[in-house]
Length: 402
Picture 1 (cartoon, rainbow, N blue to C red):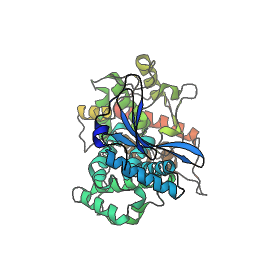
Picture 2 (cartoon, one colour; picture 1 turned 30 degrees about the vertical axis):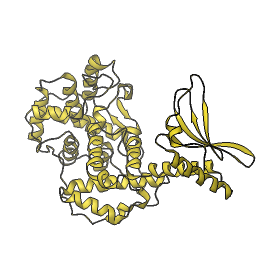
Picture 3 (cartoon, rainbow, N blue to C red; picture 1 turned 30 degrees about the horizontal axis):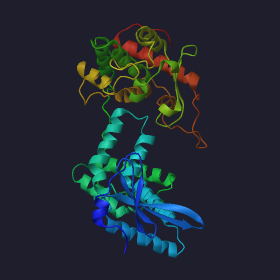
Picture 4 (cartoon, rainbow, N blue to C red; picture 1 turned 180 degrees about the vertical axis):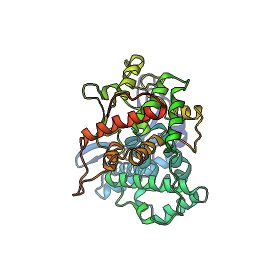
């Protein structure tokens, strides 16, 4: 029987400037600090070394519970097991389990892998995680999730929308592959669900590909009454036909005025390879005019609210609506399909030149990806031909080129 009583523990008080111990026998005691905090402690020796084991805080841990924890620790000692080391191993196991849940791995993946993605993509992905996946998989150890379990979750989403179900499956695949690389899972179980969901119809991005419609677009851009920065973004979207995110995140340091080209670093590219965009005389003139307005900013198209950030991913989309084009007619990504179609079908440019300039994965006869400078001279000529053609459609005189 110990020396302490529940009443003695409850009535224990701090002594100004001092700590005191209320012993219970066998190395167990209640430590009362000078500030009145009360901690259960157990002093013992293991392998000739004096150690102290924390058994909890009073009143969260009452005297009866402290005695039980003390008895368990003494039993461990009797079996030649260090109770402090055992507690640390248990704590590590708990922390490891918490770090390997689907939610923790997914959030880690989100922060590490999606940091450079567009705001809209990050928002859409986080919405899928929080609304559709976390409610069912949040606390599940990622290595223990079975394909059948994931399918049940995806089917719930599929009942609402097939498209989001496929996006959620794709997101899960990326998370599982991240977990494999992090040593937290052994395989991507989403791969087992190939063909398990309903087929979703692929929606092609809206684009104008008839020359008469393109002329209407170009005239609309010229008469656009919004900000000069967004107007330039519209013009350069047509002239350069790169991905919307690459256009809006263009930086002045990436413009090589001496070489008449825009060099996009690999980390900004979808395929994670450096990309070169030759600049036509019209594109250079547009950039030179814009430099008078935004040349002191990092981005070519800075946000009007935060100069250290680019314009929003909705700026060009909203501008297209303001000049009378509907969602079904033209979207920011549509400039790429527009150029791809007209360069091929009207201007008869070699398809591989076009594909290179679109930064698509083009490979040589041996299956290797072409490097960033492949057909650079021919692509520069193509970009000038394209710019001249756009001038012709809008009714402007040709400005240089062939």
